[in-house]
Image (cartoon, rainbow, N blue to C red):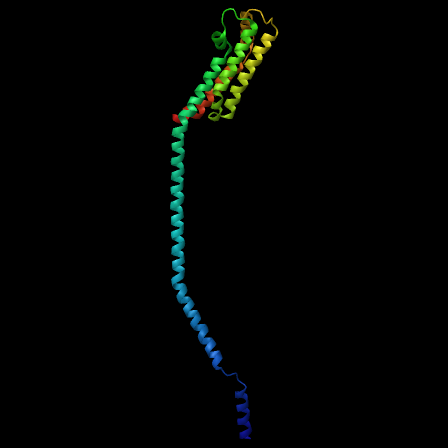
Length: 211
């Protein structure tokens, strides 16, 4: 009976799994790998954080320098462009003043002129003045230049309409009187309106900024 019991115990023990050499090697390698990985991470993670921080610092420095350079570039351009822009506003105002009917007629009318001659001379002078100043549209706003252009066109229409109802060979004085009569009766003469608006724009964009 004792022999059977002993043999049964042996049989039961034999059924328990035994650790093989390969299993022990795997466990050893796994444990060793994790130790090595932790050791590597202990040095690499701080290094990565340090590099990332350095990159952010360098980027912030570059962005600041770029912003400063852009600001300096804008200031340099302003120093160059501001006098040119101021001159452009001055020239368009002068153009409008020169083509106002009273000023234009006093410059171009000559003794002995006929209606037709004065008409042609006025139109020629208006267009010549406009062409001489056409490049100023680069430096003024689109609204300002549209005021200049529309003023010129309205005066050309006035001259042509006034002359169209007259004898071409009549004295130029008749055309002068007709143009000035019509122009002075207009509630808001285009040239005066344009001059006022352009002066206001100039004041708002430049004079106020300087104060």
